Image (cartoon, rainbow, N blue to C red; front, side, top):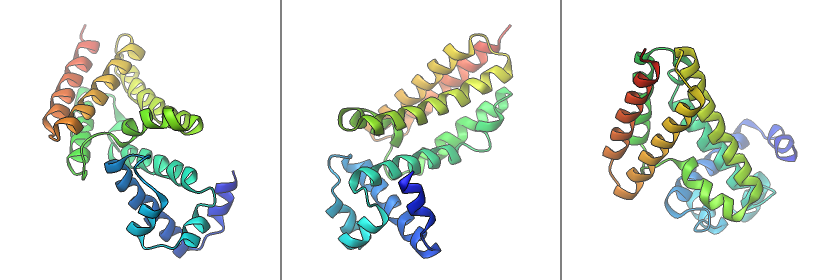
Length: 199
């Protein structure tokens, strides 16, 4: 709540500076992880002073990392729109798969930023782990809602299987440093969707 109040007091220029710091930190964490990203790294990447950094993030690194998680979750969510909100035909699922593939293909590093943060967050910050879990659960529930609109059998279980397939494909894209595992995972997901609605 305190962070929200602080943000409301920022000028448009201040909001832009804060957003720039969050985006740069997000990119650094993608490569180095939370533990491998220090405030000095952030300052160097964003050419901000220590006082500036604490002006925008008075809670220090913990507050900044939470802002990064929210930023990455929103970026991933937006990349799936409008397809994610309109999953009601097989064709709409194909559109969603293409949007997912285009988003991750365009990333500087392969893999899901939210999924990558989950394991590290769980070991370092219980509140952050809870927030990451909430973002992941919301994503899965949106897939489940799409299956329900399709009249799929056992939408909750199928959505869990689809989400696990997607995250597995994203993990392999990161370890392989290639996009083909995600392509294979998305092909498998579309097969799961068709099977769930077949009479």
